[in-house]
Amino acid sequence: MKKGTKLYSILNGKCPHCHEGDFFLSHPYDLKKLGDIYDECQVCNNTFHPEPGFYFGAMYISYALGTAYFVTIVVALYVLNIEIEYLRKVIIISIGWLFLSLKMHSLSKIIWANIFMHYKLKNK
Image (cartoon, rainbow, N blue to C red; front, side):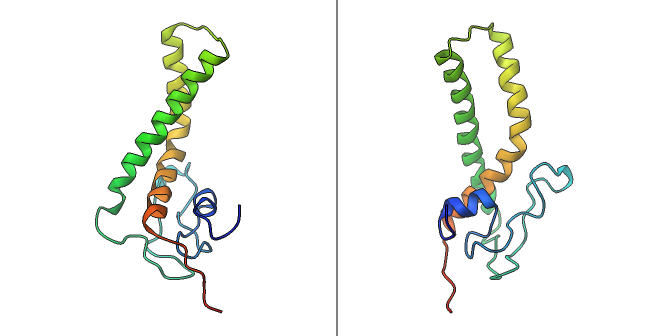
């Protein structure tokens, strides 16, 4: 994974435009700053808020991530032939989602930003 790819920006939480500045104010498990992002990049001054309500679209990404999580757990339990009652499956999936939901919230925002903002190599 090298600088210049969208995956680099997503996994490292970096600016989608320059891949150097931080995207988030804090880590995803800081409940006081949950999902808060900088207004602009500290390095390239690219704005992270191109228009009002820009990140409402990240809800679709969050929904897709949640669905992928649910399907992965259900398929894993089926493939591994682990038979547990329905209520326990719901509890296991819910507890896992409770811990992952904060990370997924932040992840959905940076994925959404990377869909619309593109890497631009600096002029030297």
